[in-house]
Image: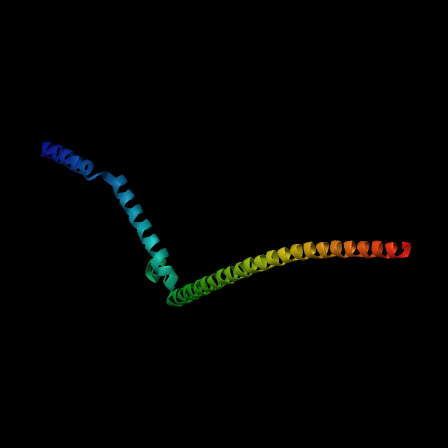
Length: 144
């Protein structure tokens, strides 16, 4: 009988080694918990759901209901914040467009100002030449 126990224990030991032992099981459990956490973050949390129920969390019905209300409020706040962020982005884009438009108007005004200054300088030069020619003509009339 003792021989059978030794063989049986060896057989069970080999079976445990083949199964992978606790390290593989721990890795599997950890990976599944991470998958559930990721799923909760992506799907449950945005809709105000909780990750664990009242039994696993060891909470009373009132405590769990209060926690559910809090999670629902947080989900609503997250939706509201996302809407505000989108509105803010739209406002920023609108202001950017207005800034571009103002810059183009300012550039056009600057060009007009430069061309106007050139025209005024040309007119002033022509007027000065006209005065000089009138002054010369007047001097010639006085000499004659």
